[in-house]
Length: 282
Image 1 (cartoon, rainbow, N blue to C red):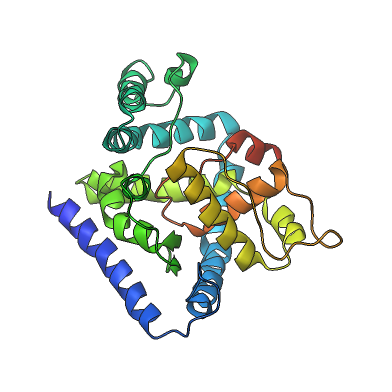
Image 2: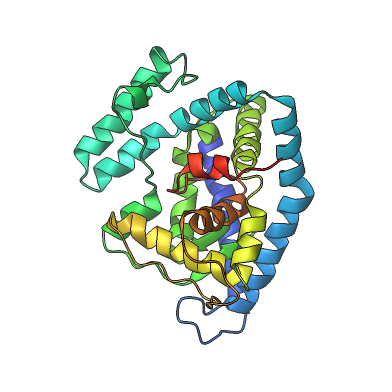
């Protein structure tokens, strides 16, 4: 329990610091991004942290561990998040999906050797992606402005407010043993980044303005998740001559860019990881 409170205070401190910084920033004409000046600076900062620390660690991780072992680690990490996903599904009134998530966790934690094997998916229990930000959206809470938090990456005000609870509900943060918790958290970050290696080139070729591209993709995929339905994709800074056509590869690159800037990996993006893996290049 003390660890939960420490995690909550840390998350609230990051959120409060960001809002303090935002208060002093000039606004822009974009209604979704009134704090674009601050956001662009923080986007660049997070991107540099990724390039200096996270990406190199992910490259070493991939070079050292065989593919089968990395798959098992990914299964374990995904299994840890299923109870929180199930709770949010139930809070949204999706009881069948919530029960499916809890059954996934029970099945993979036992017969799946603590989640090492994803036998729940083979048994017809699909992996879902829910968090408190989506739950608040389903309850009618407005998303607010787009903001980029230090280290935590792209968010809306609604998602930023929900972040401390998502951190507490996310399994690694509920582990009382500090070395174990830090090991699990570090592994989650590095493993998640390793899945996305090789996507930067696609993103750079697709977008004239990487910041605007990632922002628009983030907002659209969050609205898609909240509404549980298809929404039209609109990306800024595209034209017929200089930009790649919209499609699975570009969507994957945008999703990868968003996720690699969310350095603690709170919440999984709803994109095809198999497609991301297929675009990977060492």
